[in-house]
Image (cartoon, rainbow, N blue to C red; front, side, top):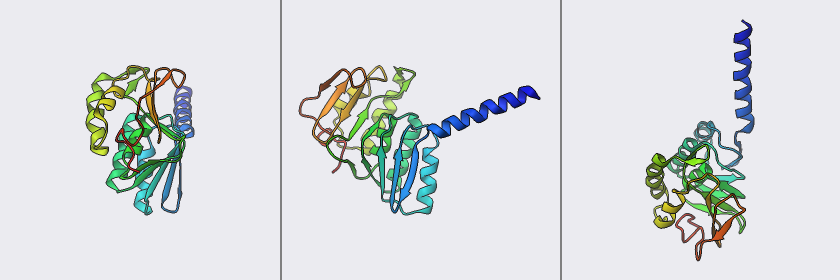
Length: 195
């Protein structure tokens, strides 16, 4: 009995920690606000909201990403329901899939950014996932710069990322500590934002 109780307590703690670290999701009028880490339940929550409310915009903010499959699911749900997306702050990794789902996509102000790279297990690229990502992105952003997409989806370590802003873009090789500008590129001419 004691062993079962300890196991149940362990499972409850994991569930609580996952819930506590999940994205904060709120609704104001026809807008859903999503921020924080993507842990896996966000797609179901968004579907529930869409089933009970008329939603026109999803605003994403301050997310380092997380669960890749959830990012795909949220992006697909947003597109299926003809919803626009916006980033206010930063939206990285799997969060970028959510943003790319928007029928209209924008960044709020000059400092907001979308960060893109491949899918990772631990710190290393899952190379077999690259084909899925390279097929998925042009479905949602048909004007994507394919050369850039092929570069960011092949970045080997999870701390490597391409950041796109309204007026510039950068390739960062060790978080944001080792970055170089990508000449003449921004979120618009990379084929990512629509407005």
